[in-house]
Image 1 (cartoon, one colour):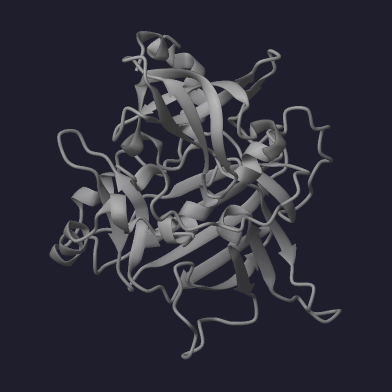
Image 2 (image 1 turned 45 degrees about the vertical axis):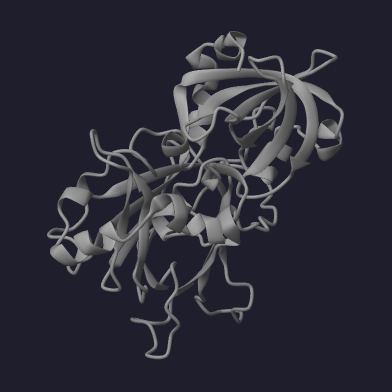
Length: 349
C-alpha cells in the first residue's frame, strides 16, 4: 500500500471509530488510510456495509480493497445512496486500517470526483429541526455521546469471574462466536448502547382502553423489540429463553422499573481488551438478572437509562451500574434486516 495511504491524521477518523460497536479489535485507529480507486461492488447491508475498491498498491498492481462501514440504515441517513457507489464510480475513502489484512479498512468518509464529500459517522440528524420538548419517557430517542458507556475495551468484571465463568470465557472466540455475526442482538445492554440507531418507547396499541397495558421498547438495532409486561410479577413457567430475556415492569412515580430474567447462557460484551492479554468476551450464565430504571430528565431533555445486573454463577459480585443518556429525535426507525456476516467483513482474515 502506498505511503500516501497513511497520510490522513488520526483526528479525522475519531467519529467513525467511536461509532463502531467492535472497532478496536478489528481496526487500528493509529493507522489511518486514504484509498483512491474505482468501486467494484457495494454491499448495502446491516449491521455493516462494505465497499469493494480496485486501487493500486505499493507495487503498482491493482488490488481489491474491502472497506467496512457503519450499517446501511445509518449510512443512508448520512446521504449515501446505492446509486452513488455503482460499479465503476471513482471514489476516495478515508478511515482506519484493518488489524487482519493490509487490504481491508473501516471507512468513515467518502469523496467523489465532483468534490462532494460525505462524513458517515453519527446518525445523520445534524440538519434536522429541533424536537418538541418531551414530558415523559415515551417517544423516539437517540443515544447521546456520554463517557460512561462502552461496548468494547476494558471490562473490569472479567477479573471477577467464578471458575465456571472463566471456563466459559476460555471457550469463547470473539472473532468467530460474536452473536452479531448471526444477527443476534446480544443483550439488552448491547441494544441500549448501540450508537446511531434510534429506539422508541411506546404503549402497546393492543391494550384495551382504560387499562394500564404493556409497554414496548423497540430498537432499530437488530429489529429488537421487547414487551415489558406491566401486569406480571415474573415470567411464566413456559416462557421462552432469549438473549433479551423476559421483562416485567412497574411504575415508581415517573420512573419505569423493569426486571428482566429468563436468559439462556450468553454474551454481555463481544470483545474485551486487557493490556497484554488476548481479546476475549464477557459472558453470562442463565442465572443473569437485571433491573432497568428509565426516567426523563426534563430539564436536560434526556432519557436516562440505568442498568443494574448480577450473575452469581459467573461473577463474584454484582456489576457496577451502567448509565445511558438518550436525546429526543424525530428520526424514523427503519427495518434493520440484518444480514449474517459469514465470509464477509471483519471475520475474514
